[in-house]
Image (cartoon, rainbow, N blue to C red; front, side, top):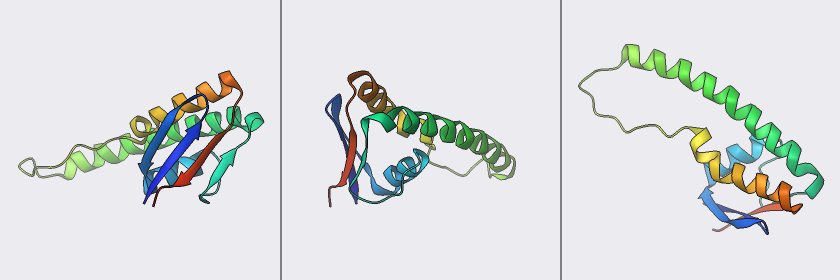
Length: 110
């Protein structure tokens, strides 16, 4: 499933459903599809998202250190993409929505 975020302040953003739902939850909303953040609530959603991402980053660093201590140096693995990196386009959308005083919405593309 794909989820697309919409705002009149920026271009649409499409993400895989599991990542998008995690980010929606981090903003303080239930993962219901479709959904909307009212103009007055966008700043709080951005703050919630940034706070939760900072907490997740700390956990990820600790878990990565533990994993590196136990991993096989000869094993090939794919690089991990942090939630902060995945959230960057949404953060920019929320910042633009605050500046332009518009809503942010999301819906399923499936």
